[in-house]
Image 1 (cartoon, rainbow, N blue to C red):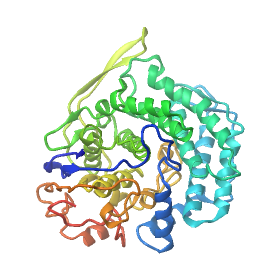
Image 2 (spheres, rainbow, N blue to C red):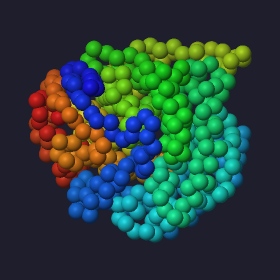
Image 3 (cartoon, rainbow, N blue to C red):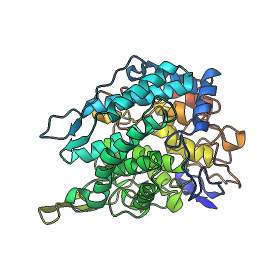
Image 4 (cartoon, rainbow, N blue to C red):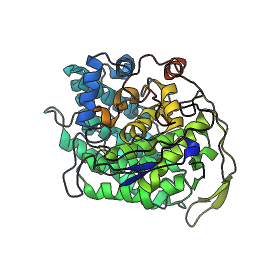
Length: 460
């Protein structure tokens, strides 16, 4: 039995939920495809788009319009990738090609057009046949983490094709990406453990987990899970989300830095939770669903809401070298128009798989819909930190409607929380009717997905 997180004051559902393990037992083979998308997910996307169902059709249109998702895309592989000052930086070639491979592979699974699969395979094979090293300043760890987990996800979508060099891709991840990410989690670039904000740990954590699953490396998966739960670095769940308030919201420590990095961190932690879930490991619900409480906090804050922040002082510096400290005393200013394609995945897990309220996350998902991907959020590297397209990929019906997750099932009753004061049955939206709210958010027909709110016991 897993307790669904939260408290009534934040609109986070409370109750007891029994969930069957979503995928494999501890000693069973890993499920493939089984990173961000399972076979059930891919079949759902294809069926919904073929039927013209919304918001899947809008999500697919967003994908098809992206310049990276075109079958004429050609790879630009490099032997050494550099990221960071003092080096001939060329890492944009890597992230652009990975996103092109991922988008073409996803487009293939939805449309069935083989040309997109061939393009994805050709790009991934070109890189696995040439890349031997990732170099640069400390930013090389960011490159290894971000592009390692993304490469694994793109490759996972074509791993069964005869023209895909599976063994070579596994060697690339195990020999080039994984060692840097493992090193960072263990040694933090020889800095004091709090020197780096949570997103640094989380990029490495995502890479170790994704590589472990893609390469059937159970030890790597175990290291990633252990670090998420108990790691000394700021990316472990209790360091990234250090304070839980009585209203059910939990501070995301990087909110004291800036909005962009806080959104990055939430997106990365959600990615880790989703990949783990698809292998039967429930990090979403770990520590009384602490991640949900932190995601709700960041969503509310990013939407322009007031949130508390407990002053946080962290040590900085190199071990045996310089040292200092930095204090974040308040949540940073935000731009309510800023978004990243991170919310649909999180909202759908909690509201559809678990059947609990996630009011602020749901509002953020509606506002961001339809979510795009790399190339839709500007030309700089920050616009490529998430693979995106969550409206297409993660929208699902409730498990009880037969349109939910293929592995997880709600076995017990869920008691929805009361909505925040003044929500009038649609948690924290301030809108009386679901149709009016959806229209105001710029989303058209959304029946059957997370973006359709229903009145149920005072929550959504």
